[in-house]
Length: 265
Image (cartoon, rainbow, N blue to C red):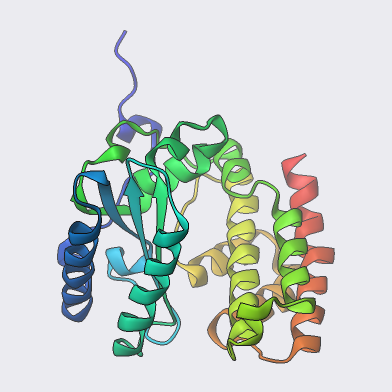
């Protein structure tokens, strides 16, 4: 008996393509690739783009660009300094990006059994810019409870961590005038993705668009409309007020997270 195909199992497929990347971001990726190649040489395993930019679904002023350098060697303090220099050099040139996330990680991190969520993200939402296609042998999943739990593991711990960041910003956050809005947008994305996970328990539905997550969730749970509309609003127009941010987080934790607790068991 033959194994089921991706279509039979409705595995989530990668929709990213360099041709979908806007021309100005193609230039940015090429410039960054050159910097990466020059610095790491043979130590460079791969350079990836993750997220909406690779799908051509980025929203000006809202979406960030998330790029990851994967190293064959250990990550060093000097690499961390270099990352910041690259970010400081290029981010101001692209004001339509909410931020430029540019970081390094070690190839061996993918071998950790706890890295299955990370492997899924690279498999289904990663665009190889240069190097070895490490995601080729990673697994995808069909929408369902297993994937919902994989993508939303430790959601309460994550929100508690964000709450601490808002209340007790470190020196870097205090120097960033957008740190509260960045936390609020991350809360919103976490909550809306949690809504998607709740939907997947009842229907094999999957999307990466926040508005679609909200719409589908409300088909099943219309009584939660005030909370979902608030989450979507804070995703698009995040507050910079700490009190409002904490109130938003507490409401989402008490209502949406409680529903997720019930759904995920």
